[in-house]
Length: 411
Image (tube, rainbow, N blue to C red; front, side):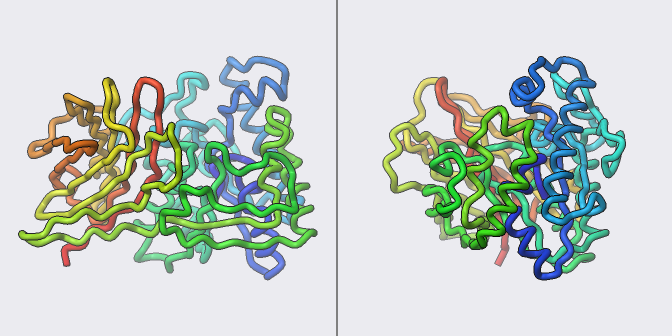
């Protein structure tokens, strides 16, 4: 499952080759057509894209690049599925556009429905139900036993959103399908991997920060032939290579790596207990510019407690936004609250999807360099699982933590 055309090649061209050699069936699902990388398209086409038709044309070019790249690895057009959802808009849809809302409409493209007639669901509105429905349709028809998908720690919003939509779809289908193995591949991390360019003699290692998060990393070592075929597949993405020639080939190395965060199991604490369960994201490296928080959770009574400990104290206009999306098997995900809590040195603002709301019982406190929130679980729909992410911002710096899965246990 690829967020954009080219991700399937740079992240998994090696595993695709190995799977085909083993006789496995392989299907590639492109979540978007990558029709919003306007700067790359200006360099490639030498013209400014302003009209809606221009963005669609951009998406068609990137789709055909994927068809050619996958063809070089032995996949036919019937093995490829294009969903056609909005490049750089799917996280907005995940967190805000559900339940009969007017579809998401991106400012530049001025499109609010899938514009590609060869997509899985042409003219589907840009709402969460459409994306979730398409992913579930693919899973039901194909019944995969292994899924390779973008990583929840990727800095690209579409990469995170695809992972989350897939998780929700798998939960929804847990009684219909045998649970597949999930392998997350990483693409966008600031300053990683280095050096840039084609270095087939080098191996890719996980970013240092993610080595400290209890991720069980796995690797696939590629043969010289597999490396060369991956290089050939990546070379078909001319619309992206021309903009930044070394970048895509940086991922053509002697291995591919996969690893996902384990869920954080939150056990309900007794009356006399109180302890924080950490996400293990505190870094031991010297990163003077880092503003990333260390996050802890606690489950006590009917409340979720969140502690955000900053590496630099809250100063001036610094803000923390906490995203909490609840999930229950017996409730349609569209009907579940999708909460964003934004807290600064003074006020707290809560949004449920696009609306500002008041949560009775929500409490905030600040202890030294930590912000602590007490959140009634009823405001999250009394969930079984919570998809959670933290974003910190100041006047000069914005950082977003990975999305993590919290699983609540009463015993």
